[in-house]
Image 1 (cartoon, rainbow, N blue to C red):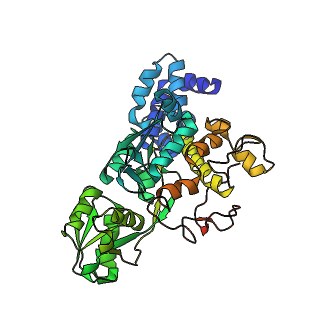
Image 2: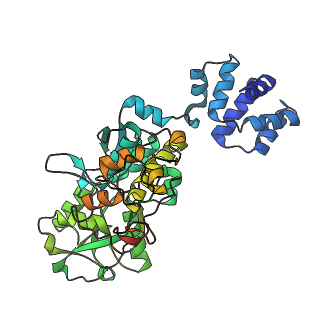
Image 3: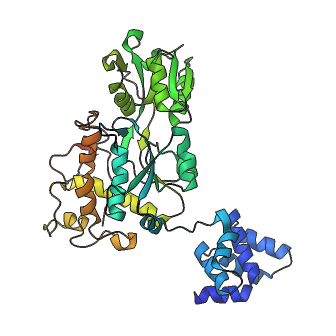
Length: 410
């Protein structure tokens, strides 16, 4: 703080103003120097010093201004406005007492209502795992139901702590929506048709109408597929999945396109599931995972770590039924369980034994998968598929040979 005070006292309010402008407009050092010198307000040496000041964090700028007595901290925050990313979401979540996740309740396996009216599913369990890690309670969650088109604006606004609603990871979404934490399911887009249509391949859909959810990568992929293969396909769009399924079942379109796992899930709930078939072609890559708002690296790291806990829990053979509470002698298991060593719990702001709590509460990745997407859910196989653990995972009896893998917890 002494270094910051010295800088501020030397340069005065002008430096703060330039620092704020630089933060809001992402000006380079050279641009700051040039602008200040052209205005005749500073020498080159002073501009250089101010450029260094522009590299201060938002918190430092606020503190410096407040320390000078030029403004209160609230006034400094107000000056920075939306350009400041002053965030401690972990503390906000603790103060609130719950984790807010944006999700859904209309797709079996991912997010749906069970017989008791409870919102359950693969995506919901990821939210429950996060709540366990930071609050110690898997039920300390609030699920905000949103449409596909609302996903981007919802996570951009920061009104939720995590978006987990079958969200495909793309570069534009990563830069524009929020930070993607971890791929938790590898999917790909396909097509469903009524068997009576007699279509055996997606390449036979020339002249067909296809129901699709509006504002999704699914809609974009359909357009790409039609263009690339010179197919005349009419996209019939609806805002939400329920409307798409209803339109398809009522015959308003010839086919229905979505991620293949969702086609299987939604098809299983149709009035006559056996009347429909999923065509063999996969026309896209759809890595799905949770997204957090931009601007809080600690929260981003926490969510990544919680997803890693689930994955490594399965890989190391730790399930909800055998979580160890004393040293096992297996270095990796003991580190994961917080019994010996560390994987960064203190800097993350979570309990040393967070992994024990998470796996006891919701199970490991394999348990979550089996409960929702596997044999006890919509019965999507893992063995030898992308959603099995990586080929050399240390587990003895888990599905392997896939792409489910996380950064080492150490």
